[in-house]
Amino acid sequence: MNEHLPLIVANFKAHKNWEKVESWLEVVGKQASWFTGTIIVCPSAPFLAAAYQKLEASSQGSAGWRIKLGSQDLSKFEQGAYTGEVAASQISDIVDYCLIGHSERRQNFAEDEKILTQKVQNAINAGINPIFCVQNADVTIPENVKIVAYEPVFAIGTGNPDTPDNAQAVSKKLKAEGNYTVLYGGSVSDTNIKSFLKGGIIDGALIATNCLDPQQFIKVLEVLKS
Ligand code: PGA
Image 1 (cartoon, protein in one colour):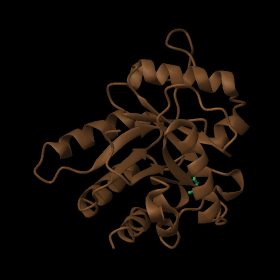
Image 2 (spheres, rainbow, N blue to C red):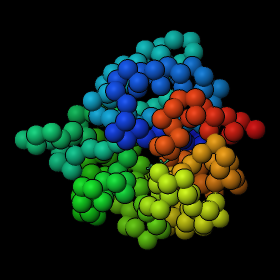
Image 3 (cartoon, protein in one colour):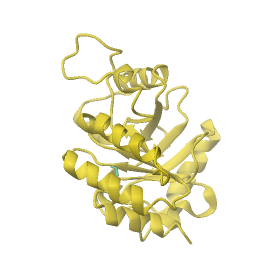
């Protein structure tokens, strides 16, 4: 595993235009340069190339930002006549990671085990590291996945997180199965992130609501300082 832990993923979902993505990168890039873990930001697909260029330009400067880029999704098709799709091979030069299997994709886009396995395969073949989301410890995890995000549906966007004890028990179970890097996601905030990451059983967090405002996101990172 190359990532410095904790691994904190910011999932913008279908929020923010480019102007807002760009200012988020600037604020977090400059104000979180002390953070020794790994930040992975996942903006919407149309902004990946511009975000990549912005991050590349910053990493050439002396105060290189500690932010990596991820996609929120990719196509189950390798490439070809699939209007509207974004194939792994098209973004592999610009992203290092991709979320796959988020419950919102499973529910709203009927993504089942077969489709998700294809997506993971496409990501890996293109050199993209999948961050595979599971809603409980019994969900099938495709081969070659290294990073798993445990995100119980009741906790997503509700302000009602799982308990750290239960999330850590799920993490232990997942690690016993596949030695994964395990993230917890679902209503993570500055007031609860420390309790989830305590003891190193959970390796990081997947955050949506509390990542959108860059200052709020920095607050979440800052409690990890001490
Ligand atoms: P939340 O969402 O942080 O808003 O709960 C997490 C996610 O959906 O990845």
